[in-house]
Image (cartoon, rainbow, N blue to C red; front, side, top):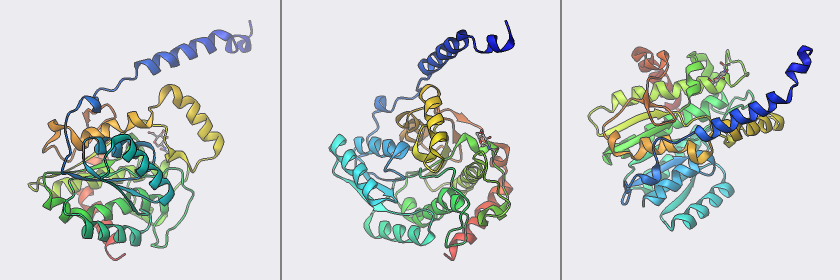
Length: 321
Ligand SMILES: *[C@@H]1O[C@H](CO)[C@@H](O)[C@H](O)[C@H]1NC(C)=O
């Protein structure tokens, strides 16, 4: 038998398929949102990127629990479709759509202004929206587009809504980061699109690291306010976060994903856990894994001095815009 014969042996295909099926079956969810009886009646929640993927399932869960839910979406048509679907499934009519483009600081300010005018309280903010694989692009604010969408936009949004959130305490801020943050680095020139390599999700990884760092610093600043801020890894999920990649990459991703990755509904579990679980009351400045376990984030995300600096720089960058 030649090496090629051995490599091409059907046993490989069969055993790989079996392995994949075993992995698929083993994938279990540790915390079950449907078994959690927490009600959110009288509470208001905002979920960004709620028109699709994880965000839609998070919003759906909050609506089921009786919350007033605001879907913060960029696309009016896709947002409206999600709105109607969530209202129909849950029978909760107190679900609303507000438009925001997180890559534009003007749009974030306009959105926040509207929320501050319309809402009397805000108990849950889930910063879920994110993009991956965007080509190099500088926004009109002068920011690199992935950084603007994944970090600076949500950062500004959170800060603009902070007084309302504090007045509504106990309240929770949940930032959907990713295990990818462990591969990220901090270089403040990245915010303006300098020194970046657009390869293998590197830009995404950096943005997700800033998410965890600034969430930790926010938690420190919010001590004794009754407002908690945590970040969470949803798992490797098949979502539209991939929509900017070429079709063949998405195809491969979906094929592999069918066996190994989570569905959006499963990916929503750990963010929902952070937002509603009773045992997390008062827990803040932490990072949760996709199975809802409390784990340590990357060393860079635990550097308190770096967090102070990052937060201040992001504040300065977003304050004038
Ligand atoms: C980004 O993170 C993912 C997940 O950890 C990793 O597979 C990928 O290689 C990282 N990209 C870079 C350039 O480090």
